[in-house]
Length: 67
Image (cartoon, rainbow, N blue to C red; front, side, top):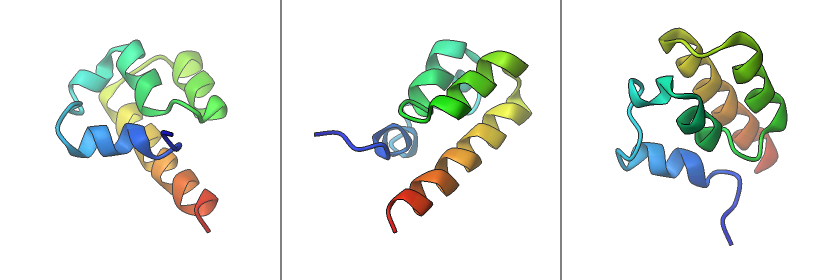
């Protein structure tokens, strides 16, 4: 089974680059399983800075969830 951390593993493998994250679908895949971050991405729209912000928040959420 794929845990909530799988999208970032894909990111690390090079499947996604920060430029590719500009697409809403790709960004949604990266934050899949984190409803609040996914909806935030749609509310604010997607920019390069926001991609980094969402990625960092997803990592923090994953770290908290794994404790």
